[in-house]
Image (cartoon, rainbow, N blue to C red):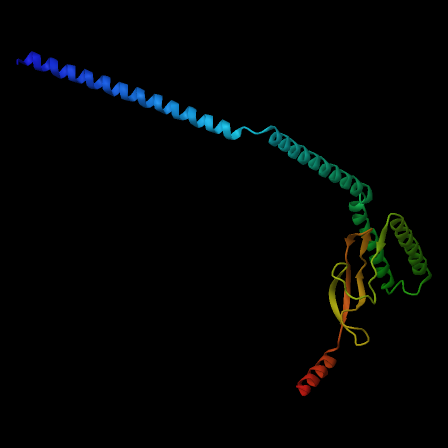
Length: 216
């Protein structure tokens, strides 16, 4: 066999191999397509629902939609009520500063040695009290009321203790001094009362501790 025949046989062999590879690749592609079609068909079968199931699904979606609409309606009504009931909350809170300034002015004037026991001071204090009472009356008409403090038990929701005062005539934790008046707007706290609360005298505490030691 000469060289030409050998080359021809080699070329023919390569051609046959290429054809075989191409056919194999084509078969693989077709098989893949067939698998994908079968998979899609299975998924479609899984997604198909009976009329009863579709009806139940629609009922569920409809119920959820109505529930969400009802929740939104309630939130809107609550926001509207709050806006009506507490619309002046921020203004009222700021207005309390006027009462504080009146109280401070009275305290300064009453402690002025030059004005003490003078008719001028009495008239000024009288007018300041009128203004103070008028403001409290206006607050009252708008459901803003002062918080009771003196002789009340300390309530962390309404009072803020600023100091302790030794006082054996009161139960410990009783409010004996009001530093700044607190206010409520209906059931909402505008600001807490700043107060001083009673505590037992040091000597009394020592006596009680000694009694406890003896009893042990």
